[in-house]
Length: 450
Image (tube, rainbow, N blue to C red; front, side, top):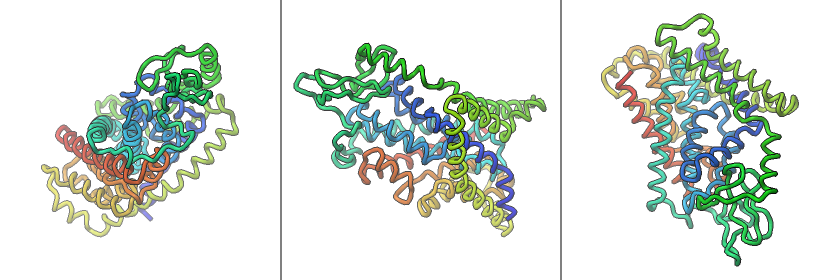
């Protein structure tokens, strides 16, 4: 019970605040609008990277399954605009960013648990986690995009045949040289896509105020009524920056406190505001106030209830990891491990990565495998001379290895992105495994400097 209670004391409130904040943001529709905006700004070629980095960093307060269910339909709608391998690229970007975020980025639930288990200040975990996760996502997506377009992905075998009315399928040209010859309006990112029938364009994605970008990257002028529809919709929705400001403020406070502490310049008032519990509480209260003003009291209340429901299982898993660490410490295994590892080698990081990888293959849970692997070395973190943040990052990296059929994420990606099981093994299992190795490499490089 001591291990369970200790870890709950460290991170219980942090996990609860983060999940509640994410649930409220989800209810406001902020996630859908953010993804649509990314496509408008970065275009088809850049959107897998932009979407991956956004999901892996900014949106980690949202419970993984909720974030996946929200973002997958949008990713599937974007896929045709990325060409023949669009589905593969978007599915891979989603899988990598979702899984990396929960174990490498604050306030991802496993990241917060790892920090508490190893005694790593949350601000420090945020800074070094960011340093690792950004190159991990970018490099991994780049590697996978190259492999997918050079023989790894077989469209006829790895994608499900599109069904009638499926928005994700690439439109075929009609007799007039246009597309979507059903005579109806094709859905676009802002609900005002290219018109069908007589020479209408393919489903399009957002561009400037009076134009869109078609599937070939060309700009297409909007009709007057389409401009009006977009204007009315955007004018009635709450400001997107305003919705995310409280969460961003919380992260800035935590990071600022960590930087000032390392510089020896921390003021008592700043120390209070930058403490993770207070900072995330400020973010939660701010998000709640903004949401009440924009979507009303009833919907915020519903989001809070959903958030409490989601946080329960996360807290139990986290507590189990803390209990394991206490058992390891009490058994004397810590002394054995401390004598085996040396401070001047990479053996501890590679070993914790391997332990987490094996556990993940066996039990199918990223969070459990990361927390368990870190728990094995938590009692000796101070003895082996390595910064505990490196052990946390290595455990997180190892837990990403080989996401497969025991994972709920695997099947959600398979069904919601229109992949076959074989295709999901490539985009999710292989893609996230690539990210696991890349994250370990980034952690080893980081270990040279800290």
